[in-house]
Length: 64
Image (cartoon, rainbow, N blue to C red; front, side, top):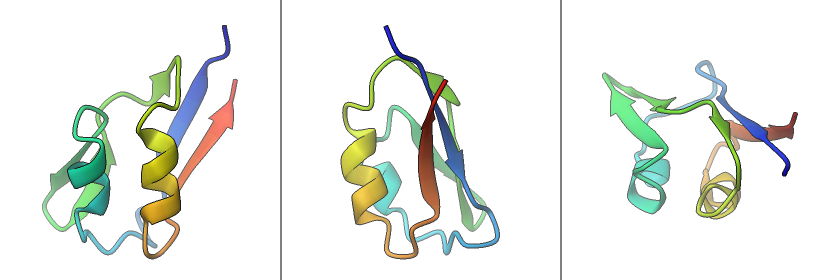
């Protein structure tokens, strides 16, 4: 089974909260930036939608 590493570019992130709204089990807001709760995941379930919906394209995934 593939594993994926999820990253948020902190310099690009504007803290809009879209990722939290779409996938709160993997993202949360800390201050004015989003953070990944769990960096390594087994599936991109709601994460794919979050990556596509980020208005500044700050979220990426990489297969490990």
